[in-house]
Image (cartoon, rainbow, N blue to C red):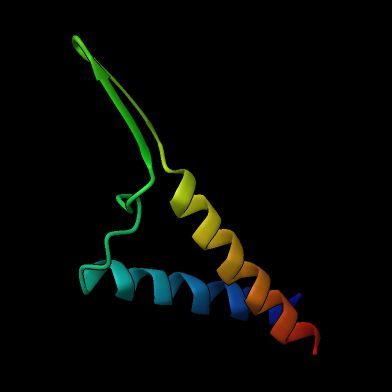
Length: 64
């Protein structure tokens, strides 16, 4: 449990640093954004895929 909390903290710190440095998380090319009238629908599909790949790699490295 302690190892999981440490890894979670490191991931949050890394994400915070990436956002602070200007990495456009949530606004990557391929994300779906539809604007009609006064409403907006936004689905960050590419961002979800990138986050999934990164978390899978971290999980794979921890199991190794």
